[in-house]
Amino acid sequence: MVGLKPSEVPPTTAVKFLGAGTAACFADLLTFPLDTAKVRLQIQGENPVALAAPSVQYRGVLGTILTMVRTEGPRSPYNGLVAGLQRQMSFASIRIGLYDSVKQFYTPKGADRTLPNITRNAIVNCAEMVTYDIIKEKLLDSHLLTDDFPCHFVSAFGAGFCATVVASPVDVVKTRYMNSPPGQYLSPLDCMLKMVAQEGPTAFYKGFTPSFLRLGSWNVMMFVTYEQLKRALMKVQMFRESPF
View 1 (tube, rainbow, N blue to C red):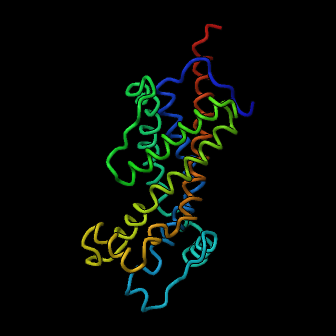
View 2: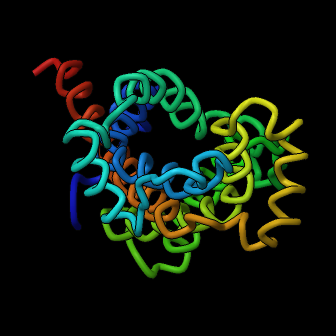
View 3: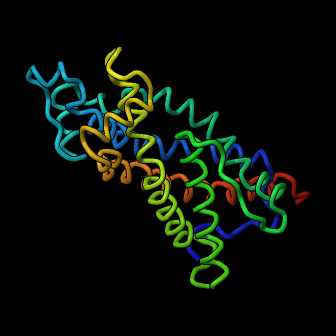
């Protein structure tokens, strides 16, 4: 078995919270430049005023990061990291840490799960957590893999891909709308319709590769770390509670 063995005692809520928040911060720390590059690629050439003047052109994920470092300094790919870590420590610890408890409460017999309102966060959260859970359960039930690192890696990779496919259109519209100059779009719906009319439906998947690199790597880092942290923290807790 690769990694720590599963604990005989189910992880407590506190362990899930701490493990999820820490794992999410670790994943954010390693993949943040990919998110920065993704946003730059998605909004490149969006502002008509910027098109009339010379501007920095980004090509590919690595090219974007290197261009940012060259033109804006080595810290530029990590602009906004502190806020991102604060968000992960508070938000991810709740949404990931509570997932198992909520799932067991509402679906004690494996009943169908319902999707929340269609917003970017709801879509990504549902796609990530539910897909990871389903892939992991299928791998374990079919005895293809055991509950260790390879299983967690494959499940997280699949969850990242599904989350990118489902959330990319919403993410692109959100990024375009929030980074557009005042008055360019009347609403997110207006932004979406103009994108389709001017660029076609493929515009919704602009920057798909950096999006997948970001979400895919983030999911792998987060879920693998989370699974190991849960087991490590439970071992520490059991050791502290042991009378010997």
